[in-house]
Image (cartoon, rainbow, N blue to C red; front, side, top):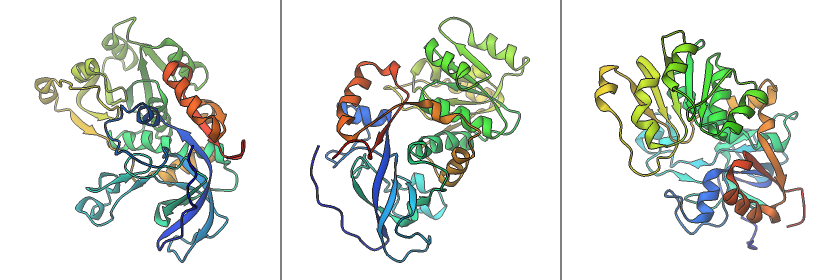
Length: 331
């Protein structure tokens, strides 16, 4: 814990009192010093923040003091060729909060107004802290060009895999969750209502997919593990002309079977963060049709954050999403 001055208001930014912030798996690896994308040092981790505007100047977004907002944490330069094409998540000089710049696990945070999104009155801050993770899932679904009626294999039933499954459901597609941890699959099926789950440690995934898809195989795959064995075999899980979105950060070097990818003319589409998905995610969570709040393992105070991260390191299987509630305890 560190005492810092309250940030001063600058042009184009708002000062937000953080009300809640999720702990991401990348925060855990950053704490351990094993996150390859981190630029140390930063003041504070955290990129899943929501809060209340306490200071703001003139802005084109129509935001005012007292507005409740979700903060998009990927801060682009708004000037490069990718920004010019509207792909702000792929900015050539991108700075992600809590990774390349100061994070949101703090009482007050300065953030660009154009990356602040007003929250509806009916959406509480704890559920709103799930907006950013949901945008990652939605972006992967968009990258894989998922359409209504598609069968979509999702490898990895952790937080992001489940968010991708929610995205598939919202688009009218059929998610097929694959993992080697049965407890995760049971949770996805029994608590979240996922229609198809499969433990690839206990059977032949290709045969299972043939059964579910009536022999056609899946139209798309969203890879959320970064595991080399999946990369080496993923071409087998989709049909000719299929689309594969790569979301999970790879664990070292991986091998793709380029021959089979070419023979089936499969599109391989790496994913980076999300782009333009915050309004969509806010609307989906507010609507209440996705049981997304069931993914919250527990809420904690800011003082409990370090202890929680240490426990997540020791017992990762016990956690999906932990939310820091800034109204709990005194900082």
